[in-house]
Length: 302
Image 1 (tube, rainbow, N blue to C red):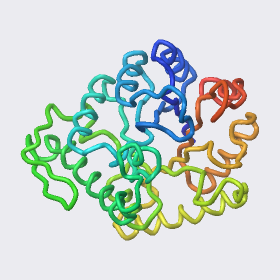
Image 2: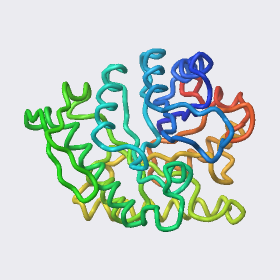
Image 3: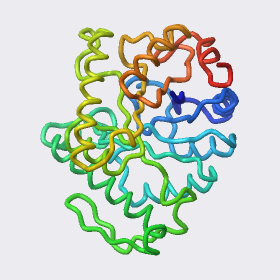
Image 4: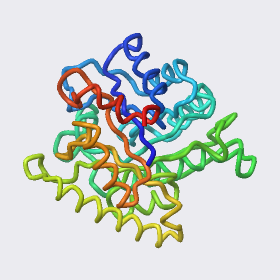
């Protein structure tokens, strides 16, 4: 089981840099950051951009993988996002991972004027934008490696790219790994076709008051089965697709103690998860967990 951390972009980088270095020193597989304009969990907090934060983190570290968890079509057009991806892969010398999902009609959408009735994307449109975005990102980022193509043209229902030039391409060949978030049938088939890993949270689809640990595990087991079915439909060996659980949104006591983490990680492994992501502890509010636990579960200390 690979263990990674997620570091929120909620502080100036002069304060955040030691955290990113600490994550590397502790031996974590990867360090991710949210890619939102704003986040409902910290509506009044400072909130910095993911891409500049990750570029700075690349300069402050040398070994740990870095990535978004996750970017989305909410405000990321695939063409400029692809340029950011190759730039971050270059700055990090081949350590960048692109986490990407369909997004939601929550805070980011509201900020962009999609919160009023009739102005937001339907579930079908959001799913279609996710599929097209991933398809176009794959085409842009693998062009030079696949067939020497230096320019790409794409005509989709939601996105266009006309002679889009992306050079020199990714440091990682044929492109950076995609860690894709999806719960629905079409989204999971997109994961099966293009993903290096599938990522899901332990949150589920009901209010916090209705969640229990047993319910969380039953939902995750069902989604793993759905992912396996999607892989079969796409002709992919399910065992070739990594599975990542982002924790911290349910009643699972993942970061309350080292033993609790081991228990959760063990259940994850039984369900076929290859990776678990925990949030780096904050001082208060969301993800304010005992600070010693991050040290105790760190790969460097195991």
